[in-house]
Image (cartoon, rainbow, N blue to C red):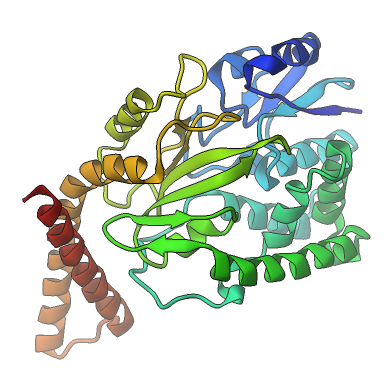
Length: 357
């Protein structure tokens, strides 16, 4: 029915990309604009090039016009959302009904890929390994397993979406769940966290972002040995905030512009980019910035947002104080979270002010 491919944005892969793009190609989260434009059947990418952080590619695939038989479905990053979207298109093309259970499993992948809903919950205790896993974890590990052919990964995800626990893929996913738990234990031992206004997490582990959010709503994750599509290890930076309404006045676009201007590795085609809540250094090549340099740029753009965050939290605290004084019922747990967030934000501002004094 379909072929599947991973496009490589690195210069040496131009010939291979040209060959792939010669036929009918539908992009799925092809986040490199030049490659996205070359996909003759369009590009399913609501979060990055579409600027819709609330919709995952796998959700968009439910209503996307089906590509013709023989088309190639291509992405630049084989993650659960991209391969899940391909799986949905494959199921639809094969006439497989997407019943309630299938929609629930699609949502599991979508919710794991999209930015978090609701406000940042505030600083929390160091997690257990189980805290770093979620319902989509085994599918995410399957999607990222480059030892399996891309076609096999898409078909296994399609089988799981369509049949759930009745699928043969369930036993395979159980193995990935066990592996993920072991990796979570390893992550807590190997990742280093520098807490502060921006949490800086250093280490070669996919759980860095989840760990960083235990300390701050904005995280810089620095992987010194990242492998793009199973290639050679290189330095990769990712900057993310809890969601696109977290620290609204963060000057996100200006921050990305400054990162591109500062990074010697950034070019007209290989650039820092992503969505309104997560961006990464140029794909497939080593960033020319250190973790300290990236964190310094991010901190510069966080300060004004923290001031706004403090003002907003004070309004919430005043509201809860009034309810308490009146003897009216209120959400005590949320009130405690708001106070913890305010305490963190004031300490973060004091630290930033100290850097400028």
